Every structure is written in structure tokens, then in C-alpha cells.
Image (cartoon, rainbow, N blue to C red; front, side, top):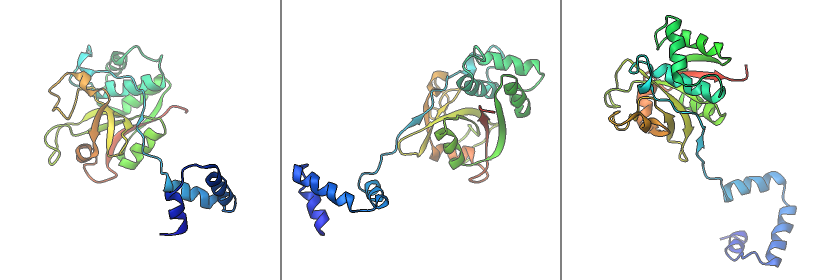
Length: 223
């Protein structure tokens, strides 16, 4: 054990010890002190949760079992433009008035644009990209295969909103307008509010064709 290691074992914050540490720090290059500090006292990962409003698709006035996409996009719209709509039924109604299907992503882009929110639907999202968007305070609407086991998921697709990351960064915190995937959607829709989906469960349902094959909508609120 070196001298510094032994010194830290006996460090109690006494005046002469503080003086010695201050003198040593003054003799060392700042980048060395910074590197030492990062290793000696690393920051613990933190949750990063966006306060996105939650809407259930199951109380929608039209097509409650088919409007996961409008409800999910409405959550993001209300986050970025708090006064744009009264609720997700507003966006559902607009899509219907446009003569579009609820899952028509091109028409959804136009609908959101009419409220002053630019977005794009992509088919090449990765886990890193999604987490980066969340860390930049932008939720992401994602499309997953929500039926069947994660080893063999299937279905026509279901849309939800990624609104946060957990401390370990092995899960996404989501707003799922249909309820909780973890319970097999057996409970009420409110179970989908700030629900935690482990990447082990979410990944096979989202990144079906590879690590950069996720379907989802990105938002550009400043454009």
C-alpha cells in the first residue's frame, strides 16, 4: 500500500490534514485532480423522468382499441405544447376528420404540425438514440409488438411513449395508453402511467430486426 492510500485511511478532516491535501492539490495539474475525483467519488446514475401528461386510449370517444398512436402522440403534444389540446380526443378527432387511419404516421406528422409541433416517424431507432432523446428532455413515441412472449412477439403493433430512464439504465419508463405490458394488459389503463419496462422485455419487441430497427416518432419542438 502506497503512502497516499495509507494517508486516506487515517484522514479525519483534521486541520493539518486539510492543509496537506490543499497543498497537494495545488501542486497537481487540474486535469489530474479532475480525473482522480471522477474515480474516487463517481456520480451515481440518476433517474431521468420527463413530466409528460398521461392519456388512456381506452376512454377515447372513437375507436378506443385502435387509437394508441393518437393517444401517445397527444401525450407528447401536451408535453411540448401544454395549451394545444384539451385531451387526446382532440387529436383523435382531427385524424378522423382528415380521413386517415389512427396508425397513419404520415398524416399524424401533418396533424401535429398543425399544432406547431414538428416531428418525424423513423424506422431506424436504437436504444442509445432513444435514451439520448430522453436525456435531452424529449419523449419518444415507440412502436412495439405487444402480443406473445418476448421470445416470439407478434401483433399489428402498439404505440406508447418513452418518458424516462431508471437509475441502472436497464429499463425505460413509459406511458402506455393501454395499460401495462408486464401484466399482459389485464389491469386498468392507469397501470400504464410511468410504468417501467426492462430493456430485456422491451428490446425484442422494439428492435425486432436488429439494434437499429426501432420504429418511433422523434420531436423537434424548437423548429
